[in-house]
Length: 155
Image 1 (tube, one colour):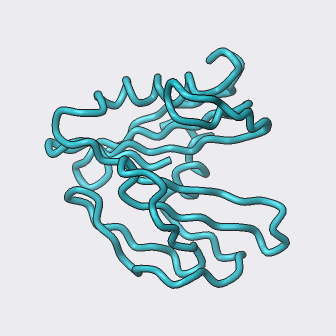
Image 2 (tube, one colour):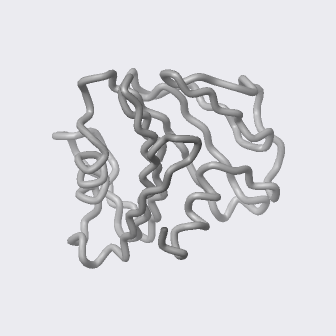
Image 3 (cartoon, helix red, strand yellow):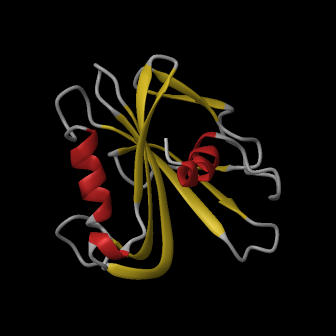
């Protein structure tokens, strides 16, 4: 495992303790066969798309920094494998892959393969095939939990 990716994994999988209290929402939620615990200080957001199985957001105390976390599950045969999703995430940036300061690493956690992805650049927000809105200075931290029932993506 690359050492530089450990903070990204921690951010995705653990809580941030320096933010204001979150809005009401479930304390735990399931995506496919996995159950996740929502950090108490992360806000539950109603899903903006049927593709998104759960959405969370968090802001720093002074609201100068924010993060959004979305969970996806496309079923056993949809969404492609881990590499297809890594490639899809990295092509959502304006800059070419070699300029994204990207890192990809895999780890075994409780007998599951998890692929961690980190990239920085101008994220092009928007639905595939639709209009895009540039979001400069954006960092993507993602995780792909592999499962025979279909991978779960968290980014």
